[in-house]
Length: 209
Image (cartoon, rainbow, N blue to C red):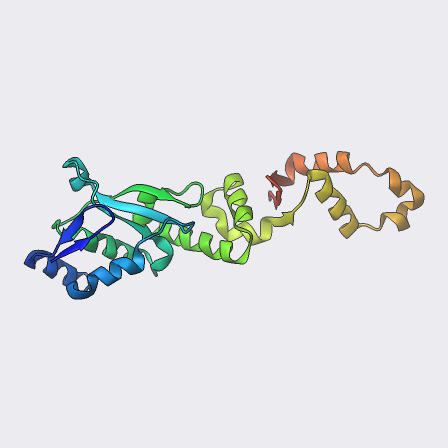
């Protein structure tokens, strides 16, 4: 029996069948498992998994995998080993990837701590604008996602727009300054704010502290 992958195929020999079973897969239904995890590369974080052994032999045999279809790192790694069960001890190779957060590459997904970073990233993207999460990652370390919610200030047209919002939230200028409030320099205040306390990436504002 041969099971088609994205490129190449997995020939189910007795030794392959044994390895699949050891990894928790039924050889007769493994083709359906492949359909469940195969990525259409339509926007979900995905990685193309081959092996170094096949690559060194001139083969790109492997499969694009949709990372959102796996529960955890162990689940992902076991499936990667299963699609390469024709190797006794496959050395997995992330040969290409897409839609991963900045600062995280495909090969790191074989590590449980990096997988947790990815899961945290996906959970934030479910609750917030994914562009805001990406902007945050561009400004701060990928491992600081746990501080996104306390740092994220929202979306604004400009630094001055945020400064005006902040002043209106914190102070009643009309009461304290009267007509002089019309002369308040929001541009200068914005420059002071973004000199050290805040960062703006694209249209998203984050607290630096």
